[in-house]
Structures are given as structure tokens and as C-alpha cells.
Length: 92
Image (cartoon, rainbow, N blue to C red; front, top):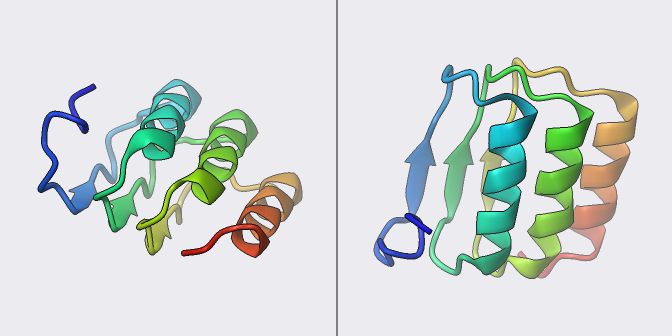
């Protein structure tokens, strides 16, 4: 809800905040509804498959996110495949 209250917000840096899968899942839901965020840094947040899948599933519905930083998380081959599929079906 907070992202929708700030329509001018284009860059979000939440690196090193230990948001884990639960926080990444919430961000996935927010990204699916957001049309302003262009850059999202979720690096080093202990995000695993569940959170990655939520983010990847939201990406095709988002029309402006152009950079998502996830280095330093527990990205598995399954998560990488999910992001690859999301990128292929995305317009951004």
C-alpha cells in the first residue's frame, strides 16, 4: 500500500535488510500493482526460492521495472529459470 501512496517513487533500495521470502513476496504483490518503480535493490536479504518466485511472477505485470538487484541472496537454478521465463514474457 505504501508504494501506491508515493506515485513519484522510482528507485527503492532495500539491500541488506533481511526481508527474506516473506518481504520479497509482499514486494512481488506490490510490483504487480505498481507503475512507477524502475529500480529495486533487494540485495543481501536472505531471499530464497519462495521470494524469487513471487518476484518473478509479478514482473510480467509490471510495465516499468527495468532493474532488479538480487545479488547475495540464495538464488537457485529454479529461481533463475523463473526469472528467465518472466523476462521472456515481459515488455520491460
